[in-house]
Length: 361
Ligand SMILES: C[S@@+](CC[C@H](N)C(=O)[O-])C[C@H]1O[C@@H](n2cnc3c(N)ncnc32)[C@H](O)[C@@H]1O
Image (cartoon, rainbow, N blue to C red; front, top):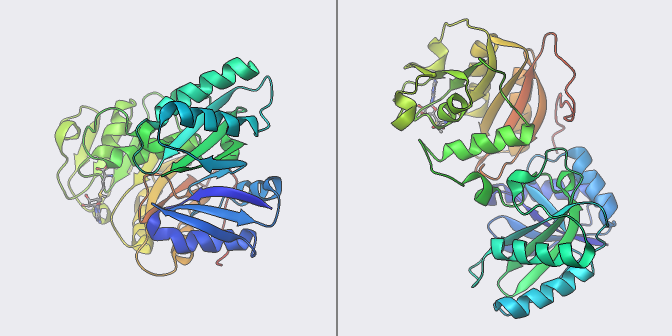
């Protein structure tokens, strides 16, 4: 028997619960906290459930952490800290492996999640002599560190020990991490920053990106700021610093009318369009992506069977692209983010499995 805190987008809850059922038909949703956050119990033990979640990389599960300690709090910092230290005493922290504490608070409490991360982190450092990461930006991508996940909902807490790979997201609270700093053009910027972090994408110097459905220009701006030249295709205007950024070339047209042929290193697509139409439109630009080049695309999900819509996109793109991952990111609402590689002389992709066609469940 094991318990996990599992999150998804609120609109995708039923599909995510179906995914959990496919892992273990006897799993039970013990509590729904709202905001797409669930406490779920499984008949199998933590290691078996975790292995299955990581192996299958289910699309609609955003974030996971196990629950090995829970209890009540009083919304009063010093007393609550003692309770939480008691919870940490129940975890099997390994000496010599660095750790981070990742706290999420669902409703207002009188102290912040960051307060707890620092106070609990210092307590663990002193008590167990293990190094802490206090800032998620510092956490290396190939993380071997232990992650203490903590959810606080009203007067209840749920705590457990896992790793970044097991949590399906390299940061604890993407809202806090990716929303840091100003919005330059649009909040859509956060979505691309998160996607690039997940896939570990770093543009080569002097590389070219094609941004389809670019307006008002948030994604183009993110890429331009990373040194890429960006061809931004959209019939609508670009705004703010994207409008006159020296790295951004705006083609004010629908993608269906694009006739360019410059070899691109990256194609991104955030068009608000039916998934199959969006995939078909990508094929007109996809021919310009260099072999092995990356395509990042949001799949907007209208009503219907979400798994089928994702499978249809993968199928339409399959002559040109191999799907390497499809994920419901923190910033995805009624959509998921898909990552593809242009086929051709495709270099071996390390660290991501190739998905040819997801089975429909
Ligand atoms: C969600 S917005 C994109 C936001 C953008 N990623 C950002 O960061 O600012 C969707 C955009 O898709 C564009 N779009 C819809 N159909 C299109 C088409 N056929 N060709 C090009 N752009 C299209 C819309 O004009 C709209 O600006």
